[in-house]
Picture 1 (cartoon, rainbow, N blue to C red):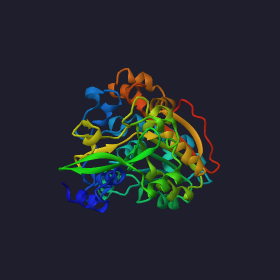
Picture 2 (picture 1 turned 45 degrees about the vertical axis):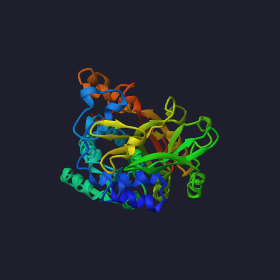
Picture 3 (picture 1 turned 120 degrees about the vertical axis):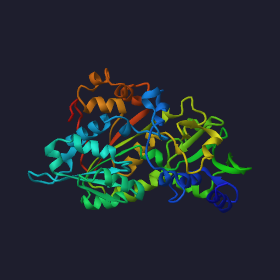
Picture 4 (picture 1 turned 90 degrees about the vertical axis):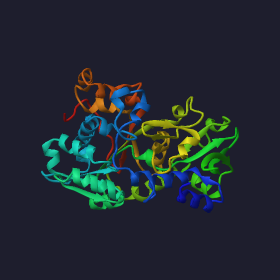
Length: 381
């Protein structure tokens, strides 16, 4: 067994919380998946509805940004439309756009190329990235653009004097989730025990520290009817809520897009008694105990509960804007996209409401008095 896993098991007396495992498996600076992987490839797209050959590539997963430039076009149009919320006075209209978790930098490069010239002239583009490897990849790809890098959102907001447009693509599902299973009356925390050289799931009473964090976050699933279904498994992104609290107070004005796999609570666990936690390794999907086998060598993710994101944002003084599917977002901000999709298989897949277009949600939220700008079917491409 991997030495770090043995150490973690010893530290937790043989009962390793799934959330602790996920934190190490994904984010350990030496052994974690995001520290070790060399590139973002393809594969996870097939999970959204069977893309077949259109959704396959060489790596463990693919985002919409690496799959087709349409998402960059739409975000560029959204940013151009909303930039007046955060622009400085004067004809130059200096404004700030912050991308949190930029992957290989491909989305940033295509977005910057899609912005109208006038908007580009006044822009300072910021990337928040903690991975040294990914920062180096981004800097190489974006070497011809004026970009500022930061390790934390608060630092980017400080550079923008608290007024900025913010977006992220498939960031939330990279946070480690706390996992729970119902006994028919209450939630039990999910732990991992060693069985030979493997790890197996074992529910047990919630730790007091976990209950304190749940009480602070008040996740929507905790007192929901899902709790009364024996064996129902759910994931709660407590770490994401705690991370939001570290920097949202520094955001004074602007709008934010959160783009990720997921749904609202009412639909998220429909016909999913085993929850949404899954792993991708060499273009294969794994669930259950197999999620814990290839430590540090596979992508592990879960769907995002957008009901929580809305409620957490409102608790932290954000105003809620539209919550739409990715297909709806793309069609709103990029003109004639449906016509293009008739001769572009990849674009057709991104817009398919029964595939990737419906599996991903786009949530807009606002800080300060920014308010929502009603979208129209216009764009930059």
